[in-house]
Image 1 (cartoon, rainbow, N blue to C red):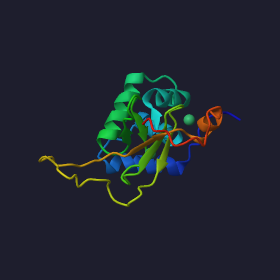
Image 2 (cartoon, rainbow, N blue to C red):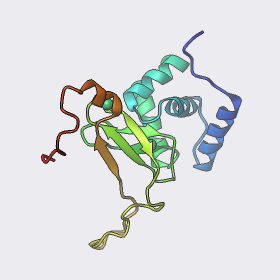
Image 3 (tube, rainbow, N blue to C red):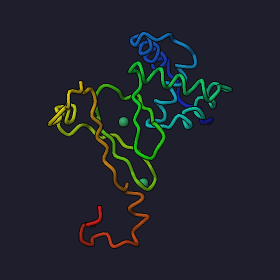
Length: 162
Ligand SMILES: [Zn+2]
Ligand SMILES: [Zn+2]
């Protein structure tokens, strides 16, 4: 059938409730943005814009960017800023999970926190900052890209150039 994302009433309810919880007005655009992010975890604003357009038709890129930023600023979405990549958005918030990012294809995967608490929030020296976030990103090469790059000897001595 069509490539339309699955829209369930349960999801609509959940997203409307999420907006209210964060003190935000429920609008069709915000709901569409939340659905797009749910269908496209770690999507960039551009990718999410395309997704929203597929669903509700004409909407300006700026409107989607604004909605994403409002949602992230209010904690309804999480925004991550991998080095060298545009910001990415996801709806898995509040659990402080980490990310695995492939250097070759830029895919992003969630990984649960290894230690169960916010990483390294107790900095050895906080220099007087009130620290509220520490970000852990594991950079590497995903299995697909590793297979594609098999020409390199895979079991050579661990690379000393890091
Ligand atoms: Zn990859
Ligand atoms: Zn994530």
